[in-house]
Length: 139
Image (cartoon, rainbow, N blue to C red):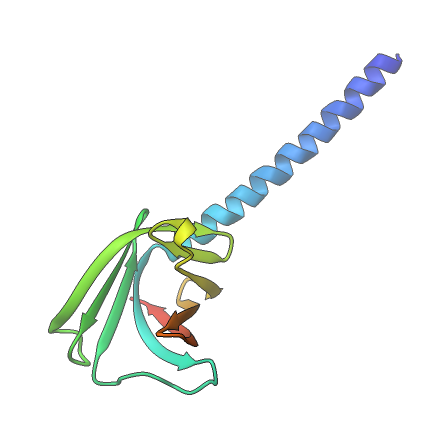
């Protein structure tokens, strides 16, 4: 009888752990699928909260299953392409890593919904630290 009780308790523990784990994976998969699509830049602000947008240009990013593609346009209505480039990305928790994860080129996902994507990035440029937050709207 003791063996049966022990087996029952062990089975219940395994059942709860497997349910919890699959729920976590489902949540992460749902969030990853929200990221996929084309996003139009609405605004950018620096670490002091100052708006840093150039209203005469258009910037669109696209996340596919495996790649990040950024396209810059020289006009506000997104007709004349200036530059475009893409590379692989990896999403881990609330971060998007571009290229190799070990290179630490990343953005923190501040907000992600069906309609809004807000990314925060930090970097050093010629010895000067800067941080910016970019808000996108799904196209």
